Structure formats: structure tokens, C-alpha cells
Image (cartoon, rainbow, N blue to C red; front, side, top):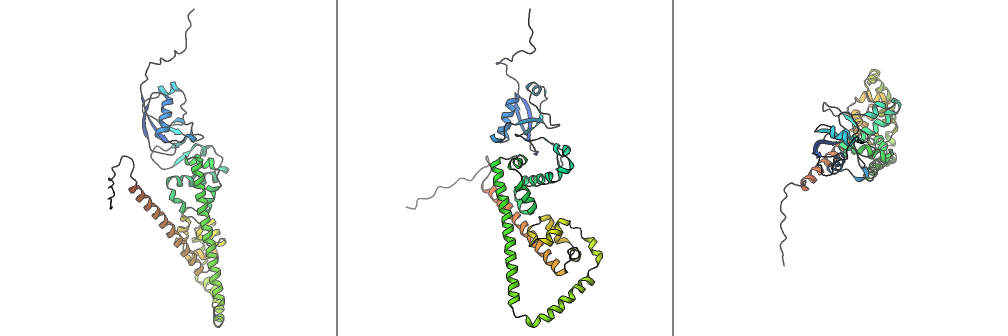
Length: 331
């Protein structure tokens, strides 16, 4: 009796035709064309072409249109030419890219996550993606955002940034240094304020005490008459910003650049009413916030200038370089 096999063994001499494919990493729009005759060859070329570290293997190939995992050789051979694949590193999950070319990436996890758990999780991921696009944005982050990235486990942050754990550990160390520098600046300002207060008390101001007391006693009336209670409704600052302005010394160091801009643009009278301050104190805080915002933007601009200068001094491979001249022998 003859026996029929469901599928014959492949002939080793049979050379399969190359299938053109398009590859990209998760959270990236840069596509790379590659040709492979088998699924294993496509995986190997993907790791080499996209520079995927060995610590992030094994990789998974999914269809870019719907996230279907492609791990069967026969299914791969049935796919049409120029099929788009997304290369996922180890423990990385597929995300959907909007086909209209928008900038928003919608994670499948966000559709399945419970609303009570999505708040803090989505926030640190958004901050991580901001760092992934531009590392110099560290300067613009608030202390709360910096602390959130520091507290995230290294493995989770590495997965979100598509980097190795060693790289992420160095990044978290840098974030901690930025946070420490802001705390040192805050303490320095506090010491300076105490020193100025001590000098003021030691000065010869006894003759002006009566006048200063009279001015202070009249000042609340001037504030009450000069500021309408209706302006309190004009304050659009978030309660979190108002709390930082009230409770924290040198609050400009605690706020993000976006919050600093909001405080600087706020009406001084409305801000004074919201914080129960006099206008002079509100204006002083606004000036400090504006100065801190200008300093951070200047630092970001300096980093970008250094980056452009470094790119010009170290051209990419393949670019023509000027020949170096040999040094003259002066002997």
C-alpha cells in the first residue's frame, strides 16, 4: 500500500526566490527595504539592519497593518511582496501607527487598560517618548516628571525607550543629577535670602521703623481696593502649580517649562488674589519664573548648537573628508 505524505521535504538544492519586504522599529516611521528568502533570514537581516542589540533578542515580526505575529514559514511565503513588518524587541508590544501620518501613537495596552490605572502609567510613558525624541528636553522637565522616570523600573523604561538596561541606568543616573542640581540651587537661594534678611536686620533702620510699619498697615487696604475679587475667576493655573508656588521655596525650580510660561503670562493681579499675596510678591515670583524659563531655553539652544557642531566635525560614514596634512619636521 502506498503512503502519501501531507508535504514533501524541501530539496536542499531548491533556491527560493527573494521576497522584498519593508521593515521598521516600533514607534518609528523610518522604513528599510530588505529582501529575504525565508523568515529566519528576514529576522537576521532585521537585527543587522536596525542595529538591534543582542540583549533585546529574540525579536518578533508582526504585520504593520494589524499586528499579526508572523512566525510560520509557509505563512511568510504566502505574503505578497513589499509587505510591511514591524520588528519588536524582546518583551516589546506592538503599537498602531495612524495611517494619516499624524504624530500620535496609540498603544493597544491603552485600549485594554483600566481607567483607574492609566493615569500615572500613560504620563511617564509620554515623558519617556519625549526624551526619546530629544534628549535635551531633560532640562525642560519638572521635578515631578524627573522623579517619575527615576522611580520606574529599569526594565520597563528600557522597553519603552528600546534601549539596553545599561543605557537606561546611565540615563536614570543623569536624571538624578539634574534633580540634585535643582535641589542644590534651591538651598543656595534659601541661604542667600536668609543672609540678606540678616543684613537688613543688622542695618541702621531704627529711624524708619515707624514709617515702614505704617506702610505695611496700609498695604492690605491698597491691595483690597486695587484688586477686584472678580479677577480671581481669571486665574487659569492648575491647582498643582498654585500649590507649588505657595508651599515650595524657589518654586520656579520645581515647575516644568510649560508651567513656568503659564505663570509668567498670568495677570499679576489675578495671581495675587489666587495666592492671597500682594501684587509685589506675585510680580517677583513671575520674574523668577521668567528668568528660569529663559535660562532653560538658553541651555537647550546651547546643546543643539553643540550637537550641530559635533555633527559637522564628525561627518557620517561615506561623506568626503578633508585630507590631513603631515606635520613638518622642524629639526
